[in-house]
Amino acid sequence: FLLAIETDSPPPRFRVEQEVTVLIDRLPVGALYQAADGVRLNRIAQAVSGYGSTQYATLEDWSQALFAVSAEQLEHLLLRDSDRNAPLPVLLTLRTRTGDERLVELSGYRFDHTKVWLLNDVTQRERDRQALESHRERLQSILDTAVDAIVTIDSTGVIDQFNGAAERIFGYRSQEVVGRNVRLLMPSPHHEAHDHNLVRCRQQGTGKVIGNTRELVGRRKDGAEVPLELSVSEPDSHGRFTGFIRDISGRLEQEAREQELLSRLAQFDRLSTAAQMAAGLAHEVNQPLAAIGHYCDVIADAAAAASNGDIERLAAHLRDEVARAGEVIRRLREFVKPADAIKEPLQVRALVEDALRFVVYEARTAGVNCKVDVATDLPRVLGDAVQLRQVLINLVVNAIEAMVQDGTATRIISLSAERQADSMVQIIVQDSGRGVSAEDQEQVFEPFVTARPDGMGLGLPICRNIIEAHGGELWAEPSEMGGRFCLTLPAA
Image 1 (tube, rainbow, N blue to C red):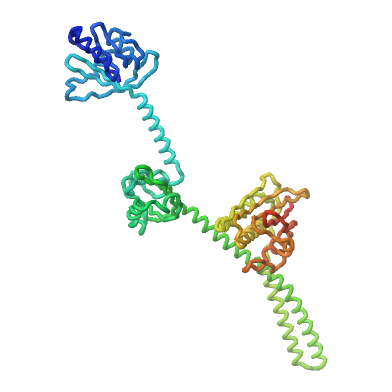
Image 2: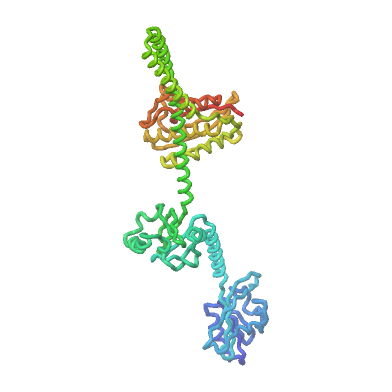
């Protein structure tokens, strides 16, 4: 503090002046006062301003030196009748002898014939205030630009902070909800039970609420319910809780779409299995049908030679039924026969990533981490995108189900690709499961051979047929890391 004193009255006696000088020098604040021999500064005022006690002789000089204003301008800061009116501080810049600037609050007083200026050095306080304000602005900017909703409530459940993301999720403006209970954002029965649950948390501890992410349902301003993911921070020293909220409606819709795609893929897989079975059945059934037809001809010839018309007619009817059965099998084969492949240049990485999108839900549910290590500069491969995608999906799903069935703790599937010297591109599907034994590496491609209780053993044979139809190969090979299936495709 600086205390400036000027008197309009005649100088007091020397003894009184000495006593005043000693008193002012002992003040715990800076003082500037008018003595008989000029304007003086006490020791604290000297330390603050850097000036000597009698650097200047008049108050005008001091006003100009310290504040770059005239003494007359400072007069406007004086308040008359100060016993009934508190001085109003004015923020001014004080310039020290070395040229440094200090921020001060200046208040002017008048006591009888004495004028007094009190100066409060608020430099550090203003710096702290500006730093705090800057910190608040940065924090508010972070809150307003955060993707997740951030809602802060006090110990009674009253909202005191509601960021922009929360406004978008719930449809309320911040001004509409701040000061209201957070149960406003909850549907029944959580709406009615929230206050009781909050009291129980305060009495028994936060328990499972803090630090855990859980899914629940919120209520928008229009009454619609929205699925949410919520995590709550530890309460601060004032008992305030901060909730971090994410709208998961998009994720749930995506998972539903993925599940629908998986169902369609499963249906496609069943149709492919039916095609394989129909081909196998047709091949197996056509041979005995041909033999039956031949026997019918023999019987008919024998009946004709024996002039036995009844047996001859029966043989003819039997031959017609055999022909009809053959036609039914032919039509069945045509019905389930896959369409001709539409081959085109395909990017390997895009093909792999596209296949993984169809199994991401199943992988997440099984706790499997899928990794892709495919360079973007690989040559394109020539093939049918739908069929090749189905092959990769089948290999990945097989790996997921094998690791789940074996109880593998750390479940990882890695899909990689590399260029081969013979103008081929090799794609590798590697998992961290038990793998395929050496004796089973070729047997797994045989029809109706499977280790799954509910499997039919036709997926891998179909996959091999598809790859071979593309001019490539599909095989299993030993690996210390787990199951490993490799396929090659010709470069476009």
